[in-house]
Image 1 (cartoon, rainbow, N blue to C red):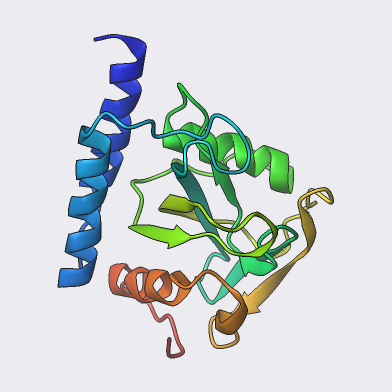
Image 2: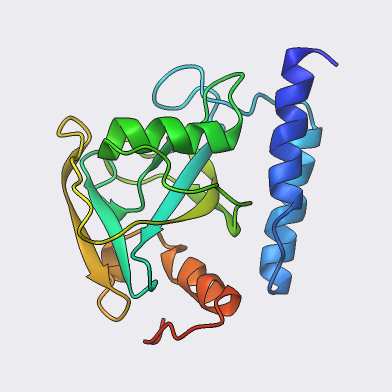
Length: 194
């Protein structure tokens, strides 16, 4: 298997590992797998939209109790988003998380990274609107008191939001769905309604 086929296999495996919670999610996963299997370019080659559909790794950071989420105020998107970034050609999506965690927050990966909990397909908004991000959503836990720095070229700032106070009107349209999935995977109390 050549390197390009290996990367495509990694991406397919990550998508196939996600459990669909409803018919809409099952449809999105099936569509994403068909996109991977089509032979289309999966990784962005040139900013902002070449190819016009490409892969992103989000990592949703919560505190140890999953009662608060860390979001970044993204300059281009003009939204509060989970940190993350575009998967580079030849890169495993989990390696993207490791790289972006260091670049965006100045942190090393604090624990082994599990499979993504969710996939979303979104038309981008903001200053670089008009292309489609296919996003794998990973989950990380760090202590709220952890010292963080943000990339001032990319973000206005960062903030911890309580699970009941997420800025859903000014965030990724799939953030609420991610929180619902997170709740479904956690045996402990994750309070609030989304």
